[in-house]
Structure formats: C-alpha cells, structure tokens
Image 1 (cartoon, helix red, strand yellow):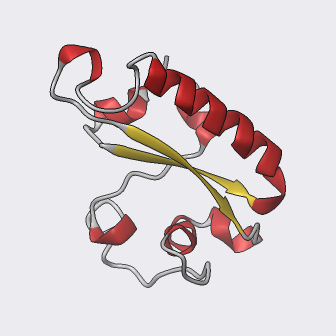
Image 2 (spheres, one colour):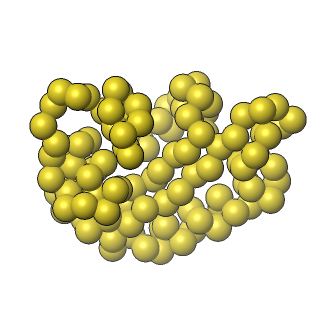
Length: 110
C-alpha cells in the first residue's frame, strides 16, 4: 500500500503461484478487512486517493519471475517475456505505466 501510494498507483496486484491458493485466500480476507476499515478503496482517509489491491493466482511457471512474463500472465496470456522496448515503466500492465517489484522487497519500505 505504501509503495502504491508513493507512485500514486490506483491498483496493486499480488501475483502468487497457483499452488498458493490458501495464502491468496488469507490475503483476500485481509484485503476485505482493510476495505471495511476504510484503508483500501475510494477516497482513502478523506483524500481523493483511491487504491484497490488484488491477488492473482498464476500458473506457477518459473519464467513468470521475469517481469514482462508476469505482466503477460496477469493479462491472461501465456507467461512469456515481452520484447523490450517498451519497458514496463512506460507500457506495462494493460498498456499503462507499471512498477514491478518483489513483495519481499516491498516489505522493507516501512
């Protein structure tokens, strides 16, 4: 959430391999709790900032660790790397500028 706010992203995705469905369920439950508390959703903390977080279960292919292959998988395509340029920061998920990082890395932000 902090990382999304820092770049003013209005959507965040947590990509998990398919076999981690139980973790995805737990994350979805926590996301629902954050929405109920007003910490995710529309007009957060009385501001004009909106943020939605989604979990996504992928096929679990090793190649989806490569950022553009992950984007392809999130878009419902075969998880194969894209040719670059353009780079994800310019043309990423659904054609929009995209920041990709490992969740473990992002947990160091606070």
